[in-house]
Amino acid sequence: MINLFRSNSTARRTKPILSIRARLVVLALLAVVPLMLDRVRLLEASRSERIDEAAVEVLDLTRRGTEGQREIITTVRAMLQMTARAYITMNARGETCNFYLKDLTGTMPWIKGVSIVGPDGRVKCATLQSAMGFDLSDRPHYREALRTKDFVVSYYVIGRVTRSPTIVVAYPAQAIDETVNAVIVASVDLQWVSGLIHSLDRRPGSAVMLVDADGTLLAGDPHASKWIGKSVTGSALFKAISGRNEGTARAEGLDGVRRIFGFVRVPSSDARLIVGLDETEVLRRVDRELLVAYLQLGFFGLLVLMIAWFGGERLIVDPIRSLARIALRFGRGDLDARADQQVWAKEFEPLATALNDMAQKLADREKELRAANRYLEQLASIDSLTGLANRRGFDARIATVWQRSGKLNRSVALLMVDVDHFKLFNDRYGHVEGDVCLRRVGKLLMDVAGEVDDLPARYGGEEFALLLPSTDVERALEVAERLRRAVEELCLTHADSPLGQVTISIGVAALVPAAGQDAESLVEAADAGLYAAKRRGRNTTVEHGAVELADAAAELGVLPMRRVSATASR
Image (cartoon, rainbow, N blue to C red; front, side):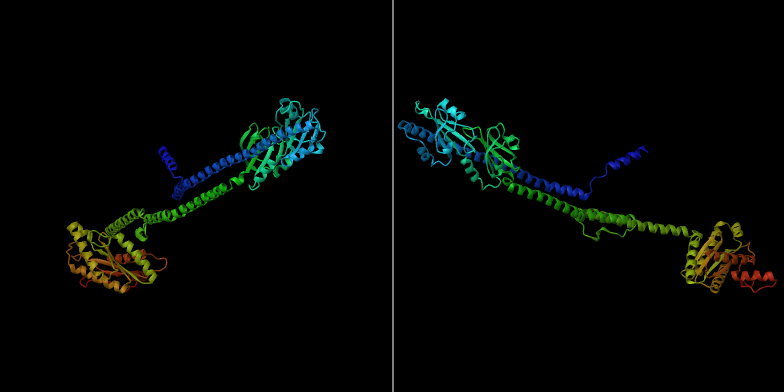
């Protein structure tokens, strides 16, 4: 019980998980998928490289953008130095400065206005009349210029007059002449930012912003216009660049579009210029190629799967099933099936050949077995002493003949033959002579059976039978009488017989099979005739019908005519 359980467990454990077709699919995918995945890997690497290239590009754009302000600051410094000298000269002459300032700034559109602030901190003259009299004494850049006596650039501020983001530069006249206590102040427009925005208009989804150290948006492209002057410290972009003066970042812009940003601190300022390129636009071509690669991977994977599945079905599974069906036919006994009825692939030819060889050997063996069985059947159905059919063979044959005759409505005749006083013959002459006697009677019985379907048989002991298909009672009586005379003519000495020689008694019956009757009815009728023949003195032939008539007449006390044959001398 334990061993059986273990063997069953082993069988379950060793059962293959994947079918042949599934294994073919796996092998095909193992061959194709790595190539496609390698292509995807290369495209992913190209994508990363493109992102790095875009980051370098946007950082370079940002640096070039800040160079615009550097150039403007340098130009404005030179202009303020000239203005300071001119102011000192005009102050010495007592001339006004307003006219000169307008002429000076007319060629510099990025300068919003120039003012000369006196010792009291108020604007003495300016290019903008609205700025006259403004008190700038509290402005850090004004104080810093007086303190350092050098050029000063303010942080980005909201101008009191223009109410827009600007930077203010200041240059003290004392830097040239210590006796003149005045500061030349100019507000510089963010025109360079607008120029940068204009230069990036051809790049879809690009963004330009200027953010101060506190996170206030000072300037930007139209996408960011609604945030100008507002704090953007809570945005993902500001968090990504916070604490750094220069670098790149990938984050969502203020409008929610994901971009690759480059940012650089603006010279002479705490503000940072931010330039962003739309990540989708940057990666559009690479992403398109990646999408195509993934679609190709899916398509070719599915194609390979279908080829392996259906190709495996056609080229491998179907031949295996065909061979299995042939083997199954062999197992069911159809040894005429052959595996050479179709063309096999080279790999299946040895198996097909082996199946054919096995079928041929099994067919040959079956022929031998059938021959042996027929021989054994003959041995089992033939009496070894006389060579006639034995009781077993007789019973099988009479059943077949009876059934066939019933279907054809034909008569079947039977002769039951018994050697008279055979026991006394055996006792006097011995069993060897008795066997000789039986063999000679059997040979006569075989000679008398003239038709092919006639069956002579040894019914048992000294009793014989002769089955005559398609025979009526008249012919059966003729055959019986010929057999009886032939035995007489043998003149076999039998001292204990009343006649002094071997004789036989024969009972004859002929019937047409009727519904409800079986072959035993014919045997009983012929046996009744044989019994009557023995009762009437032996060496006699008696028909079963005559026996019935004699029995009926005996009951009436009348001697009937009997169909009895015997030698006249007896």
